[in-house]
Length: 306
Image (cartoon, rainbow, N blue to C red; front, side):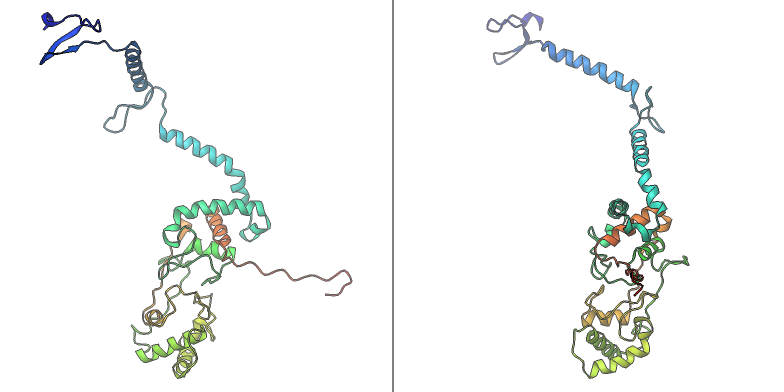
């Protein structure tokens, strides 16, 4: 092979001795800068293996002489961020939830923190904007609240959840399955549906709704109120508006009365800290459906007259 090497007359470079069909291969040396780059990367790789975690082991990896880890860096950054937010978090924790709206800056901080927590824990059911999912999860952006929409009530609902078994403080209500359990027959359920659709201004009064009014008074008014205005003590829905979780058409109402859904919401008090729950309540309250507290009565005027 060496006997076939020669200096190429055109380039002045030695050939490698390889030849194919009269085509010879030049033995061109690598550029100096490329070789130094290669040597530098080799040195850098050796230094990295010594300084940082590198070699996988059975129960971990080599630690490196610097003791650095990405997890350790993340924990340090999280501790620094927690220290930065501590004054605001402490202020939110020390402020009764009903008093937050009176402190706009603190309320805004709570809303921002609640928005972040909502994106992690709540959007799966209630949607990114709190609009809910029809027939599944309620909207948080309207004024229709089964249990109440003021800050303290929202905080309680998030903390204790709805229909959580083995939790005595959870919100609990169970609508009877009037059709499944034979409390009402199909004709009676149809009459009750007519009455509900009448008080919700979807149908005009008729003989069916008149019969349904009597049935409603005997079976439904104890929870939903005599006029269908709802009952927050037991989470009974208001039936006189246009807000329907499971639908207000005849088929949907018939299905609900026949066999109610009785949905469940997790109790977050065992998963989230009280400050995070308070911020979540502030965010939900800010979505537009939160019920503002009634204004305080005015005191006597300067002249002593009310």
